[in-house]
Amino acid sequence: MSKVIIVTLRHLMGEELETLNFKELQQLEQQLECSLKHIRSRKSQLMHESISELQRKERSLQEENKVLQKELAEKQKAHKQQGQWDHGQQPQTSSSSSSFMMREAPPTVNISNYTASAGVRVDGAADQPQVRIGLPPWMLTHLSG
Image 1 (tube, rainbow, N blue to C red):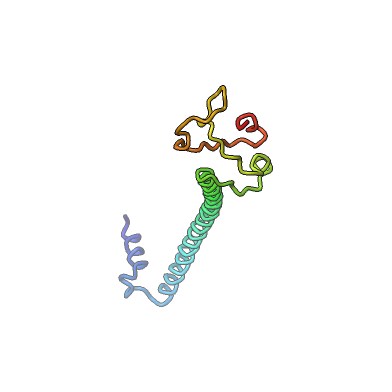
Image 2: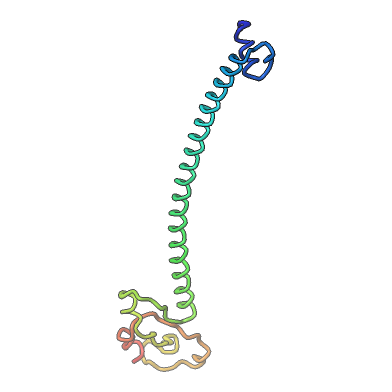
């Protein structure tokens, strides 16, 4: 580097200012202020870009969170309904297709207590577990008669 550039850089760093007169010091100050404006402008631009990117990520995460909350609610509802089925309870639902089949709890039918041909109770059948068939009552009439 040339000696002039080295001296100029030292002046910009605040070194060797003793050789400068008032006018040269004012010019150096203006150069530094102009440089600071450019630096601050670039810094502000980067901060705004960063904020915009973070806001975009925030919106994306909020949307993803809503989707996950909806999925969780659906799974909890399905799990609750499955738990009601496991315990022999009728699920509470507003769905028209499932409410058609579930207007009444189906009757308990113990098919294993009867012989296939005569319909006579088998001894010891009381010890047999009750079987719950999830069919509407009109489909069960031929099984109980």
